[in-house]
Image (cartoon, rainbow, N blue to C red; front, side, top):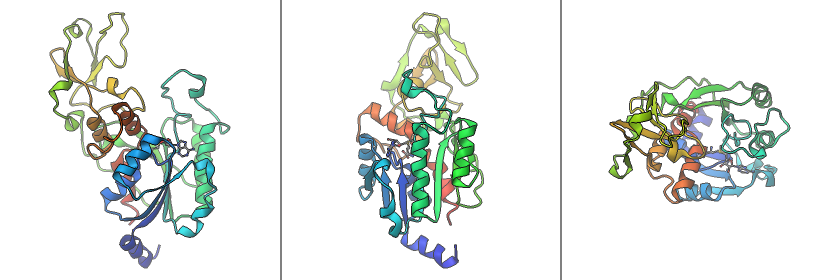
Length: 309
Ligand SMILES: C[S@@+](CC[C@H](N)C(=O)[O-])C[C@H]1O[C@@H](n2cnc3c(N)ncnc32)[C@H](O)[C@@H]1O
């Protein structure tokens, strides 16, 4: 880019096309890094996610389902950047249920690949100055390689643990140049806590079955010899695990000592993703957890965008 092009991007703001926009964490990241957004087009189909985006960014132009567009309508819109992370559930190790639909796809024939190829179609059609594509670190190697072949760049792995209190390894494919790893801010679980006494639980049964691990204590409250993921409480001085898409509320207890732990609230999960407090408060609690878990860690994306200048 010439200095004049750079100047005009900064002054006028970027025109952004976001696929699989979710709750528009990309838009929060632009704001955080101080890059003006002139126009933001978003493809998203989930009602609650759209509601959250429109509460926070009412000027967003919602465009619906990626499969209903060939993206030709954006050719003359001077799109500066196309961003997106197609749903990773098809390729992810994490499974929320045991239905056949959630089985991991191991090749480029499944729905996960079709969704990704809509992203490829989009950048080939729109020809933006920049692109940023994100997906899970745990996707199969052959799919990772094929994504790199399609996009013409190798991924950069960034762990959100560097900029947040949560571990979250993700791959980023982009033509934004010279990206380095973010500086470690040293954030821990204790840094994102909301002091709400109603969330504190005492259970005398914990002491009888408690096992102490490196980052958490686990206990067998059911008394069946089974240590479920929800009967676990993390030490305040540890990193939280990756915010998942489901059952977040039961998986993120904080250990306070003396058979006491604290349940997690949506604002804390927002903080783990470095979202503003109450960003998602326009939808019911369970939907908030899902939307946040689906989203990006804002400060990682802001870090990547900071290299646009
Ligand atoms: C991994 S999430 C991306 C979250 C997003 N990066 C954010 O900041 O919140 C993938 C998103 O793709 C959306 N999605 C799935 N199929 C879609 C489709 N056919 N068209 C548009 N969006 C779709 C899902 O509803 C989900 O919100």
